Image 1 (cartoon, one colour):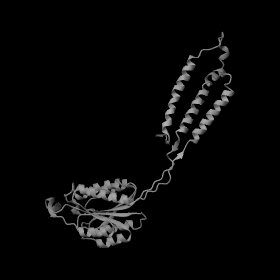
Image 2 (cartoon, rainbow, N blue to C red):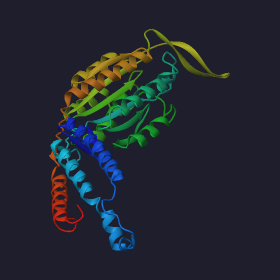
Image 3 (tube, one colour):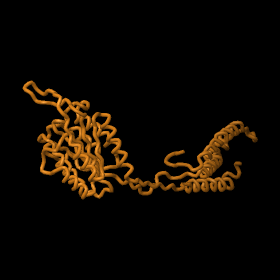
Image 4 (cartoon, rainbow, N blue to C red):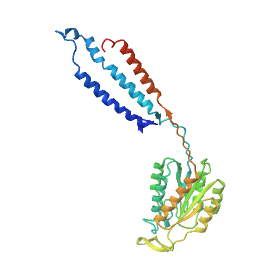
Length: 332
């Protein structure tokens, strides 16, 4: 049980506070039924302000008694602080998401297309990793950092939404995309550094070979998960014609051997996403694998908080004894 920031080790004793209700009712009933034992012809002697104060002040003693009983019951219930926490150590992971935005990512074998499907699933993944620093690299014929590593996931997701094909020169520079992600992670002191690279093609651009980039990732202790996205066989690709953009069935070509090798070299894993559901399952697997690699330790310290209630009980009890023996001695 939690009340006003306190938890109680023995909350069942708090039910004893209900005893105060019949005690208060009995006291009110008793004084309403009291009749004067002395009859006088005039009340003039009792009309002074001092006497009126003493009449009302007679209620102080039972109020002090109630406060004492309530404080003692709370002490027995053992109030404990829930706000005094020791330092919580959460070992976050630094993650770079390297996303292919080449024109082939507009193919519609995933819905509504590969790029939008990849963005939707990746953004859900980000929302599920609140303790991690996450950044975004996009690549096609060139590569650049769309968002550096950050824990400000709201800003990162807004930048993610702005990603679209055609932002940079067309092509598929897988090695350059990976190298750009490595450049963002190489100085990181996180206990785990990860790059999730998603592409739908074969490396045909950029100055850096994908295997060379994977060797660099291994050198810096960066684990690479590679995802090849695209259905088996053929898929409807966008093609520019004199009549506008039209979709034609074209063969899906993904360099799975290279992507597999890149993942193996860095202690990562290669996945093939042939549908929206498969892509969601892949990110769920990566999410679980990374969570099992990091041990999160949190420590809570409960502190007994009876002291103030003990002081209140002692003061109210002492006041009752003193007042009963002095000021109210002749009134009771």
